[in-house]
Image 1 (cartoon, rainbow, N blue to C red):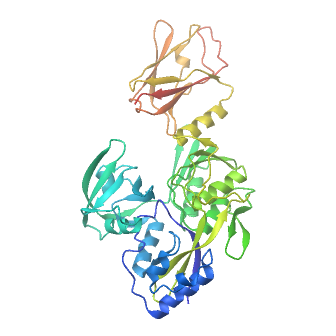
Image 2 (image 1 turned 30 degrees about the vertical axis):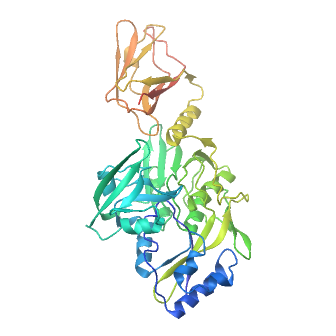
Image 3 (image 1 turned 90 degrees about the vertical axis):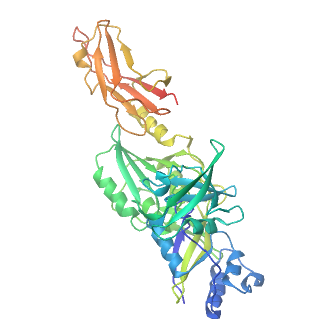
Length: 460
């Protein structure tokens, strides 16, 4: 006896959960149950040579990488991670080109405090080189009881260097959805995973920022979650009737979106990267198919297979790959991924800029000012004598793209030049937008009727 719940595998965010840390000693009845469900539900037919393996471990080893047997304790850890609460060093890890790569470092975690960065690679744990270990075995060595320490050696490709940190494991909880209002009255919503609190937190974000004119939704580094949550997320968009096409061993069917009371009323921008996987790809593919989102970023991970959870009387679980999935227009996802509409390494800044270009399409666009110094002062030379008092804060804006307005001081000198001085240094490597809105006046009282916009990049 067992129950089944459909889900999509978590690649980036939940790969730090212990999946299978040691060989399982199973009773004959338990292994027979495993054989039965693999024979009946696994996405592809399996032969007797698989089903007749003597242990659960050996059966699972013959299946795909996403099929895993959990003890009750391991499943609890997995579930905690899905709901964004776990004990560890505070990183998301993914296998990339046979390396255990840090894809995200959580704020205020041991890894964050220890200077670990995304793209760092794990070399050894506790002095043991991990090159011969699976990702799950590596993660099992990193995790442990709260308050204990672990010594990890990392390799940093950017500097071609290795370093070792001793980190203290602690409980980490973080919201599934983070939301904020960016400059230009743009809403920003980062979804970290697809769990049972995702929709509620998305609705809260929409309610809090109900007055925004546009939304940028961020699925970067989101490794997936529950299928029904993806159906509900897609159900927040009018007209998106189908979320995906599911293909099991015996059937192929369209799975409808689950309509939500709270809706996105206009097309959004959706950010993705190579670590956006599974449920993230389902969502991105559906919204792209229905032309309800413009995708910015990089091609997604390419995990187009679905898992189901089966619970055994002992309290153990098996996560088994039971289906492949495709976008509503039957585009393949597995090993292919979802390609963005706009390929960019700076998707948030680019999506934000695109919004301003649309909003202020009638403004005169000046040539980009590149590689300015962080202490840059901007000088505006007017062709006529200007009334400096009309250059109020609402007439000139300096915006860090992907973030907020920069506080500025506006002054005029005797040569009819307006100076715009940021009250804080600009961020090295960041991109900005300088807006001069119409309405300022000459000394003769004539109001300007043309706005100006100019992109600015800051030197590294």
